[in-house]
Length: 282
Image 1 (cartoon, rainbow, N blue to C red):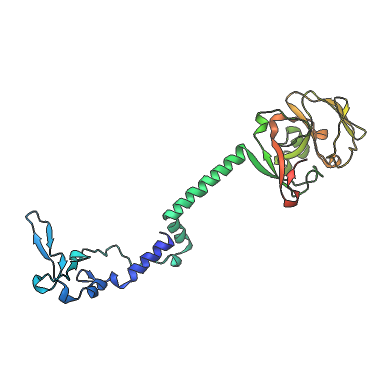
Image 2 (cartoon, one colour):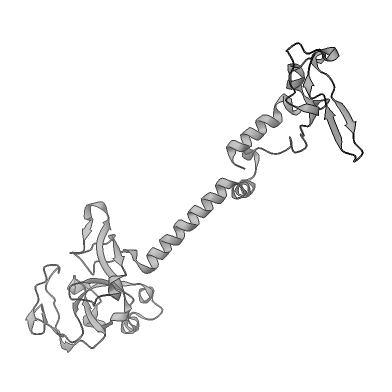
Protein backbone atom coordinates (compact mmCIF):
# COMPACT_ATOMS: atom_id res chain seq x y z
CA UNK A 1 0.00 0.00 0.00
CA UNK A 2 1.49 3.35 -0.96
CA UNK A 3 1.95 6.14 1.54
CA UNK A 4 -0.83 8.25 0.09
CA UNK A 5 -3.30 5.34 0.21
CA UNK A 6 -2.15 4.46 3.73
CA UNK A 7 -2.80 8.07 4.74
CA UNK A 8 -6.31 7.95 3.27
CA UNK A 9 -6.99 4.68 5.06
CA UNK A 10 -5.91 6.08 8.41
CA UNK A 11 -7.90 9.29 7.86
CA UNK A 12 -11.16 7.49 7.19
CA UNK A 13 -10.61 4.71 9.71
CA UNK A 14 -10.00 7.22 12.52
CA UNK A 15 -12.75 9.67 11.52
CA UNK A 16 -16.01 9.72 13.59
CA UNK A 17 -18.01 8.19 10.74
CA UNK A 18 -16.26 4.87 11.33
CA UNK A 19 -18.35 4.36 14.48
CA UNK A 20 -21.90 3.29 13.61
CA UNK A 21 -25.17 4.05 15.47
CA UNK A 22 -28.02 1.71 14.58
CA UNK A 23 -26.42 0.93 11.26
CA UNK A 24 -26.06 4.63 10.27
CA UNK A 25 -22.84 6.59 10.59
CA UNK A 26 -22.59 9.31 13.25
CA UNK A 27 -22.20 12.00 10.61
CA UNK A 28 -25.29 10.74 8.82
CA UNK A 29 -27.27 10.58 12.06
CA UNK A 30 -26.58 14.27 12.68
CA UNK A 31 -27.39 15.08 9.07
CA UNK A 32 -30.83 13.47 9.44
CA UNK A 33 -32.39 14.17 12.90
CA UNK A 34 -34.58 11.47 14.38
CA UNK A 35 -37.79 13.38 13.71
CA UNK A 36 -36.97 13.19 10.00
CA UNK A 37 -35.95 9.57 10.03
CA UNK A 38 -38.43 6.80 9.26
CA UNK A 39 -37.31 3.26 9.92
CA UNK A 40 -37.33 1.28 6.67
CA UNK A 41 -39.83 -1.56 6.47
CA UNK A 42 -38.55 -5.08 5.84
CA UNK A 43 -40.64 -7.64 4.01
CA UNK A 44 -39.55 -11.27 4.02
CA UNK A 45 -40.37 -13.08 0.79
CA UNK A 46 -41.11 -16.76 0.47
CA UNK A 47 -37.64 -17.33 -0.92
CA UNK A 48 -36.13 -15.99 2.28
CA UNK A 49 -34.64 -12.84 0.76
CA UNK A 50 -35.19 -9.40 2.33
CA UNK A 51 -36.98 -6.68 0.43
CA UNK A 52 -36.53 -3.23 1.87
CA UNK A 53 -39.19 -0.55 1.51
CA UNK A 54 -39.37 3.07 2.52
CA UNK A 55 -36.00 3.99 1.19
CA UNK A 56 -37.00 7.65 1.19
CA UNK A 57 -36.89 9.96 4.19
CA UNK A 58 -39.91 12.15 5.00
CA UNK A 59 -42.03 13.74 7.70
CA UNK A 60 -44.06 11.55 10.06
CA UNK A 61 -47.28 10.28 8.55
CA UNK A 62 -45.70 9.93 5.15
CA UNK A 63 -46.80 13.43 4.02
CA UNK A 64 -44.85 14.54 0.99
CA UNK A 65 -44.20 18.27 1.47
CA UNK A 66 -41.36 18.45 -1.06
CA UNK A 67 -38.62 18.17 1.58
CA UNK A 68 -38.19 14.42 1.13
CA UNK A 69 -34.75 13.31 -0.09
CA UNK A 70 -33.04 10.06 -1.03
CA UNK A 71 -31.47 8.18 1.83
CA UNK A 72 -27.73 8.05 0.94
CA UNK A 73 -27.40 4.87 2.97
CA UNK A 74 -30.68 2.96 2.71
CA UNK A 75 -31.08 0.37 5.44
CA UNK A 76 -27.66 1.08 6.95
CA UNK A 77 -25.97 -1.34 4.58
CA UNK A 78 -22.51 0.21 4.98
CA UNK A 79 -20.08 -2.38 6.31
CA UNK A 80 -17.12 -1.42 8.43
CA UNK A 81 -15.91 -4.97 8.95
CA UNK A 82 -12.76 -4.39 6.86
CA UNK A 83 -11.49 -1.55 9.03
CA UNK A 84 -8.56 -2.42 11.24
CA UNK A 85 -7.78 0.37 13.68
CA UNK A 86 -4.89 -1.68 15.06
CA UNK A 87 -2.99 -1.59 11.73
CA UNK A 88 0.42 0.03 12.15
CA UNK A 89 1.42 3.15 10.30
CA UNK A 90 4.07 2.70 7.63
CA UNK A 91 6.54 4.74 9.69
CA UNK A 92 5.99 2.42 12.66
CA UNK A 93 6.94 -0.70 10.72
CA UNK A 94 10.38 -2.23 10.99
CA UNK A 95 12.76 -1.92 8.05
CA UNK A 96 12.01 -5.42 6.77
CA UNK A 97 8.27 -4.87 7.17
CA UNK A 98 8.54 -1.63 5.19
CA UNK A 99 10.41 -3.48 2.44
CA UNK A 100 7.71 -6.16 2.34
CA UNK A 101 4.99 -3.49 2.28
CA UNK A 102 6.75 -1.68 -0.57
CA UNK A 103 7.17 -4.86 -2.62
CA UNK A 104 3.48 -5.65 -2.13
CA UNK A 105 2.38 -2.21 -3.35
CA UNK A 106 1.61 -1.34 -6.95
CA UNK A 107 4.31 1.33 -6.93
CA UNK A 108 6.84 -1.20 -5.67
CA UNK A 109 5.90 -3.74 -8.32
CA UNK A 110 6.16 -1.07 -11.03
CA UNK A 111 9.58 0.07 -9.75
CA UNK A 112 10.86 -3.52 -9.67
CA UNK A 113 9.74 -4.02 -13.27
CA UNK A 114 11.46 -0.78 -14.30
CA UNK A 115 14.73 -1.56 -12.51
CA UNK A 116 14.80 -5.14 -13.79
CA UNK A 117 14.23 -4.05 -17.38
CA UNK A 118 16.88 -1.33 -17.14
CA UNK A 119 19.41 -3.71 -15.61
CA UNK A 120 18.73 -6.31 -18.29
CA UNK A 121 19.24 -3.78 -21.09
CA UNK A 122 22.45 -2.47 -19.48
CA UNK A 123 23.90 -5.97 -19.11
CA UNK A 124 22.97 -6.79 -22.71
CA UNK A 125 24.68 -3.63 -23.96
CA UNK A 126 27.80 -4.40 -21.93
CA UNK A 127 27.93 -8.00 -23.09
CA UNK A 128 27.40 -7.44 -26.81
CA UNK A 129 27.91 -3.79 -27.78
CA UNK A 130 30.01 -1.54 -25.54
CA UNK A 131 31.62 -1.60 -22.12
CA UNK A 132 33.67 0.76 -19.93
CA UNK A 133 37.34 0.20 -19.09
CA UNK A 134 39.73 1.74 -16.60
CA UNK A 135 43.41 2.49 -17.27
CA UNK A 136 45.53 1.24 -14.32
CA UNK A 137 49.07 1.93 -15.61
CA UNK A 138 51.21 4.17 -17.83
CA UNK A 139 51.98 1.53 -20.47
CA UNK A 140 49.89 3.50 -23.00
CA UNK A 141 51.12 6.96 -22.01
CA UNK A 142 50.73 9.63 -23.41
CA UNK A 143 47.58 8.38 -25.21
CA UNK A 144 46.07 7.27 -21.90
CA UNK A 145 46.89 8.26 -18.36
CA UNK A 146 46.27 6.41 -15.13
CA UNK A 147 42.62 6.85 -14.14
CA UNK A 148 41.28 7.43 -17.63
CA UNK A 149 37.99 5.68 -18.31
CA UNK A 150 37.20 4.75 -21.87
CA UNK A 151 34.48 3.08 -23.92
CA UNK A 152 35.28 -0.14 -25.72
CA UNK A 153 32.96 -1.12 -28.59
CA UNK A 154 32.60 -4.82 -29.33
CA UNK A 155 30.64 -4.90 -32.58
CA UNK A 156 33.01 -3.95 -35.40
CA UNK A 157 35.52 -6.68 -34.58
CA UNK A 158 32.94 -9.12 -36.00
CA UNK A 159 32.40 -7.30 -39.28
CA UNK A 160 35.80 -5.88 -40.27
CA UNK A 161 39.40 -7.00 -39.75
CA UNK A 162 41.78 -5.50 -37.23
CA UNK A 163 44.08 -2.81 -38.62
CA UNK A 164 47.37 -1.22 -37.68
CA UNK A 165 47.39 1.67 -35.20
CA UNK A 166 44.08 0.64 -33.67
CA UNK A 167 43.97 0.51 -29.86
CA UNK A 168 42.39 -2.70 -28.64
CA UNK A 169 41.43 -4.27 -25.32
CA UNK A 170 42.10 -8.00 -25.10
CA UNK A 171 42.34 -10.99 -22.82
CA UNK A 172 45.99 -11.87 -22.14
CA UNK A 173 47.38 -14.79 -24.17
CA UNK A 174 48.92 -17.90 -22.67
CA UNK A 175 52.48 -16.60 -23.22
CA UNK A 176 51.71 -13.52 -21.12
CA UNK A 177 50.33 -15.68 -18.30
CA UNK A 178 53.47 -17.82 -18.33
CA UNK A 179 55.58 -14.70 -17.73
CA UNK A 180 53.55 -13.15 -14.91
CA UNK A 181 52.35 -16.47 -13.46
CA UNK A 182 48.96 -18.10 -13.86
CA UNK A 183 47.98 -17.24 -10.29
CA UNK A 184 48.87 -13.57 -10.64
CA UNK A 185 46.09 -10.99 -10.64
CA UNK A 186 47.53 -9.52 -13.85
CA UNK A 187 47.02 -12.84 -15.61
CA UNK A 188 43.25 -12.42 -15.20
CA UNK A 189 42.96 -8.75 -16.17
CA UNK A 190 42.24 -7.45 -19.66
CA UNK A 191 45.07 -5.50 -21.30
CA UNK A 192 45.12 -2.52 -23.66
CA UNK A 193 47.74 -2.00 -26.39
CA UNK A 194 48.09 -0.68 -29.93
CA UNK A 195 48.21 -2.95 -32.97
CA UNK A 196 51.43 -2.29 -34.90
CA UNK A 197 51.28 -5.22 -37.33
CA UNK A 198 48.73 -7.73 -38.63
CA UNK A 199 49.01 -11.22 -40.12
CA UNK A 200 51.57 -11.49 -42.89
CA UNK A 201 53.47 -8.34 -41.89
CA UNK A 202 57.23 -8.40 -41.36
CA UNK A 203 58.07 -6.43 -38.21
CA UNK A 204 61.33 -5.10 -36.82
CA UNK A 205 62.35 -2.58 -34.17
CA UNK A 206 65.76 -1.14 -34.97
CA UNK A 207 67.49 2.05 -33.83
CA UNK A 208 64.49 2.95 -31.67
CA UNK A 209 62.14 2.94 -34.68
CA UNK A 210 59.43 0.54 -35.80
CA UNK A 211 59.65 -0.93 -39.30
CA UNK A 212 56.79 -2.81 -40.94
CA UNK A 213 57.50 -4.53 -44.27
CA UNK A 214 60.75 -2.56 -44.48
CA UNK A 215 59.10 0.86 -44.01
CA UNK A 216 59.69 3.08 -40.99
CA UNK A 217 56.41 3.92 -39.26
CA UNK A 218 55.36 7.43 -38.27
CA UNK A 219 54.23 7.14 -34.64
CA UNK A 220 53.51 10.56 -33.10
CA UNK A 221 51.57 8.87 -30.27
CA UNK A 222 54.61 7.20 -28.67
CA UNK A 223 56.25 8.63 -25.54
CA UNK A 224 59.83 8.03 -26.77
CA UNK A 225 61.92 5.88 -29.08
CA UNK A 226 62.28 2.23 -28.15
CA UNK A 227 65.50 1.32 -26.33
CA UNK A 228 65.46 -2.31 -27.46
CA UNK A 229 65.91 -4.32 -30.63
CA UNK A 230 63.23 -6.68 -31.88
CA UNK A 231 62.87 -8.91 -34.94
CA UNK A 232 62.61 -9.15 -37.76
CA UNK A 233 59.62 -11.51 -37.36
CA UNK A 234 56.66 -12.48 -39.52
CA UNK A 235 53.20 -12.18 -37.97
CA UNK A 236 51.40 -15.56 -38.21
CA UNK A 237 47.89 -15.94 -39.65
CA UNK A 238 45.10 -15.15 -37.19
CA UNK A 239 47.39 -13.11 -34.95
CA UNK A 240 48.58 -9.52 -34.49
CA UNK A 241 51.50 -7.77 -32.81
CA UNK A 242 50.65 -5.21 -30.14
CA UNK A 243 52.93 -2.72 -28.39
CA UNK A 244 52.37 -0.08 -25.73
CA UNK A 245 52.72 3.59 -26.69
CA UNK A 246 55.10 3.99 -23.74
CA UNK A 247 57.52 1.64 -25.48
CA UNK A 248 60.14 1.34 -22.76
CA UNK A 249 57.64 0.82 -19.94
CA UNK A 250 55.23 -1.71 -21.37
CA UNK A 251 54.96 -5.47 -21.00
CA UNK A 252 53.82 -6.11 -24.56
CA UNK A 253 54.34 -8.16 -27.70
CA UNK A 254 58.06 -7.55 -27.96
CA UNK A 255 58.37 -9.62 -24.75
CA UNK A 256 55.59 -12.23 -24.86
CA UNK A 257 55.04 -12.51 -28.61
CA UNK A 258 51.94 -12.39 -30.80
CA UNK A 259 48.32 -11.94 -29.80
CA UNK A 260 45.62 -14.24 -31.20
CA UNK A 261 42.95 -12.09 -32.86
CA UNK A 262 40.24 -14.11 -31.08
CA UNK A 263 41.48 -12.70 -27.74
CA UNK A 264 40.46 -9.17 -28.73
CA UNK A 265 37.49 -7.90 -26.70
CA UNK A 266 36.96 -4.73 -28.69
CA UNK A 267 38.31 -1.45 -29.99
CA UNK A 268 38.87 1.52 -27.67
CA UNK A 269 36.83 4.34 -29.20
CA UNK A 270 36.99 7.32 -26.85
CA UNK A 271 37.80 8.57 -23.36
CA UNK A 272 34.71 9.67 -21.43
CA UNK A 273 36.30 10.45 -18.04
CA UNK A 274 37.74 12.69 -16.65
CA UNK A 275 35.90 15.52 -18.43
CA UNK A 276 39.05 17.42 -19.38
CA UNK A 277 40.33 14.39 -21.30
CA UNK A 278 37.13 13.51 -23.13
CA UNK A 279 37.84 12.61 -26.76
CA UNK A 280 39.13 9.94 -29.10
CA UNK A 281 42.04 7.60 -28.49
CA UNK A 282 44.31 9.48 -30.87
